[in-house]
Every structure is written in structure tokens, then in C-alpha cells.
Length: 285
Image 1: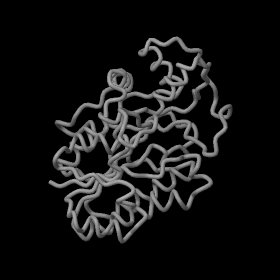
Image 2 (image 1 turned 180 degrees about the vertical axis):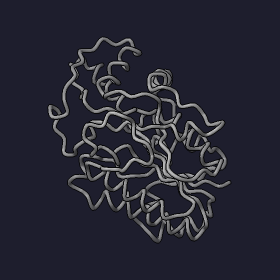
Image 3 (image 1 turned 180 degrees about the horizontal axis):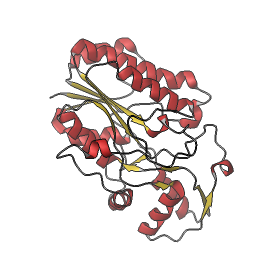
Image 4 (image 1 turned 30 degrees about the vertical axis):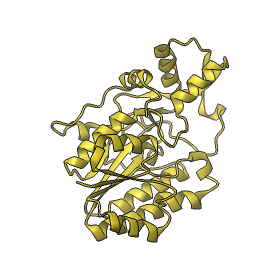
């Protein structure tokens, strides 16, 4: 099986390359640009993959509010191009999506199932939902929703929430972190392992893949510092005390029971276990 991984230098894409090993072909900027329809179709025609896994996206949630066209060009039009190419090749498309397709259900306190109606609160979430709808038009599609990704350093570089928190803690600053956004931060090696398993078994449809349990960003930071043995002045604040351009869901925990019902699937450890594993090798590529 030949598997094209789009966004191969990102946190999740780089972990998928490790999972697929010799089966994988890495695609990323600047050579592979999702917004270039002709380039996307021609390159995939030449590669003739059996599966295309799209981890690439415009993920600047706040900036998307002022750059909706740019977000849509990558997150929606780019997926239109992938669907066209996959249809020509009779290839399957795996579209990585997000918990941010939810959030509009005010007062929600139970994890979202795949069948629950989406209600995104921001431009990023709306473009990712539109991308899901585009991908679902392809007969052989797999939509994977995940949440709060973090993991070992990727070739592209850049930080994630744990590395940012540890860096700020090392500066001796007192930290204030929001405590009213409930989700499940998820470790990219665990997500990649589950996605690779689904791909190899040619599973189609929509699945939620996150670590088990739920927390807030404040709770996540507190556990991070506890595991790392750091004493940090950590204050819990509300979202309205940390102004941002995009509204975040107060609750976007994903239910993974559909995935858990599959026989032989890899386990998804708890978010606490995942964070402890991350701290053993936070910079391993």
C-alpha cells in the first residue's frame, strides 16, 4: 500500500510517517501546496497512492478570524483538490479534523459522539466542518476528529502547549491559564498509531480519536508541572480574562466509543498517561 501523507513535517504528519514507514510518501510545503489545484492533481497522479492522509491545515485559530479567505483556501479548497485527485485515482482520503466543529451547544457536559450535530463557533471550526463535508462526498473517506494535539518535536519546528508552559515556567513568571475550556489534549504518537491502524484496515466513516478523559488547559498545565517536578505559581482564569479574536468552545470533549468498539484496535491511554509519556521524550523527532 502506498500512502501519501500531506503535511508530513507537522507534529501529526511526522508521526504518521513513522507509523507507515516504507509505505509512506511525504508531501509538504513548499513543493506540495494544497491551494494549487493543478499541482495537487498532477503530483498525486504521478505518485498514484492508494491512500492520501491530509494532516495539513490553516490552524491559526485567532488569525483565521481576520483571514477567513486564507483559512478557507487551505482548509476547504485544498480538500476539494484532494478529493478530485483521489476520485481520479480511486484512492481513499483520510481527512484530519478537529473538536472545534463543536461548541455551539451551550451547557453541554457530555462527550460528543460522531453523530451529534456540529456547531462551530469560529472561522477555523467552520472551515474544518466544510472540509469534512467535502471529504465525505468521496466514497472511500475517513474523517478523524481529534483535539489539542501535542507531541515530540517535528521537522517543521514550532512549539506546543506543554513546551510553551515549560518555557514560561523556566523564566520564573507567574502563569495564568484558562480553566473553563474542557477538552482532551491528545498525544500525536497515540493518535497516529490509531489512524494508521484504521487506514491499514480500510475503515471508512467518521471517528473520534483522542486520549481518554477530559481536562481544562489549567488542569493540563497543573499536571504537566506536577509530573515535571516544577513549582509554579499557576492561576486559573476564565476565557473572558484572556481576550482572543476567536471564541473557543467551553466544552468540546469527544466520545471515542465508536473507535473503542472496533476489535483489536490500539488502546488510547488516558491524557495523564500520555502526558507522562511525552515528558520522557519531548524533543524526540
